[in-house]
Image (cartoon, rainbow, N blue to C red; front, side, top):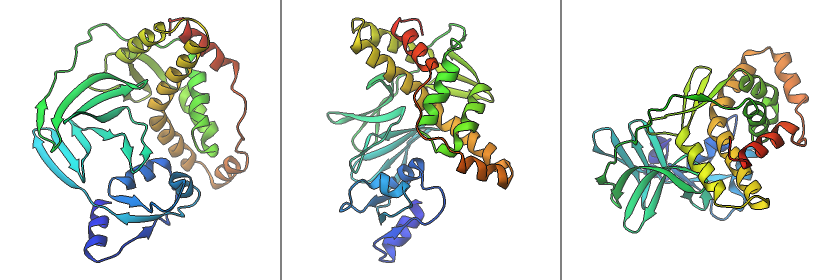
Length: 287
């Protein structure tokens, strides 16, 4: 994408539109790394996902390797940092707030790469100056406790939450994928999740941070709201992996089955008791 943006800029092409298939949120955020959407238009993400009716202006970035295993991506400021293969993103991209588990956040003149959830840093992984030079590289905090399975109520509840933020045609495939997953809390070095086939490990540090965050609020509406936020955080961590597998499964089916999935796509339905039970479990502090 950055090569295309650079060629457009060199050749004086001021704007373009995406006319390919699957104008997804993931593609939208990927385009933001090398283009800027037309600032005169409101609701850019909605316009894009509704068929790509959005002009893109080329804005290529610079990429520099600043240390072994560390590269930075810059335009007017530090946009992205890759540390050992894991990408950390600036949160605000032309007014669009990215939901990312790995973020680049500013503290004065420093840029801090953090594992991020619940509106807070779970673990800081790297500190750089504004130009991208490394100031500190903290070692990952050790966690030697054995992994433990998530309580069974998590599975069906996560399936429902992921479905609600996915293309309707993927609903059945998503539930099928989630039903086949083995979910566990455990150590995840330098990240918040790790997938190994049908086994997905979610950072125990995230769970511990969430439980402490919940305990800051007395039982009642405030704690219930935080329980919802935690459940959504976990669903959004798993969502990209689950959707990718679900999409592959749907694409592997016959044209008739794919057509049926599109036609039978369910509208938004009320959440089931499984989600309620999960929220009650989280609010009790025993998730």
